[in-house]
Length: 246
Image (tube, rainbow, N blue to C red; front, side, top):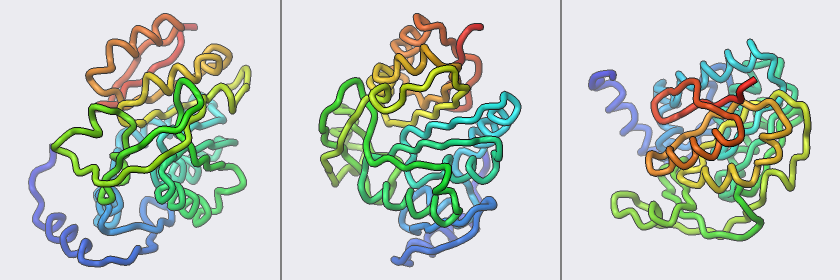
């Protein structure tokens, strides 16, 4: 764990005084970043988010000749953009972001990096059935948007905003077979429901999953995936990686 750095502390506070977005190049990609957003602020001051996970995903995709990346809970496109730029063997990227404002930012960042030809952005969330749900989010941290009922009522979080979002099942949209795919799930407590909706895809394709697992869901999800032949083979912080037994 890194110690306190006064430069970063001062820099992030000064940046938050700026209300307008900043277009900047970071990590070899171009971004439209909002200084008041927690993750954007980190990128702007040079403290990238999930550096280890991004490095692992890029190397795994390249070394295992994976051609399809599914970014489930894409936020403003951190993974989709960086893997789109740095993993040239990826032929297709599908990015999912249900919150309208954040989805608009995702589209902008893909366009800034000329990735629109191979990256598709989808303005809906993933679940076990088609429905409309209320999502809660904190305007100062786009990555915290959640469908989890318990989390939405968490007094330690500042979920002052609500929005109705569309939910679809993954399997209703993607019927591929025989693909080598990498799926990143960062859906803030909704991971069990999202997985149920992609059971056919997981069965019919050779998938690797990176799941940000909440502790209360971990045992249930590991059991569910285990029954379908997937086992955990790696972890980085709260992200657990699964692949299928050959």
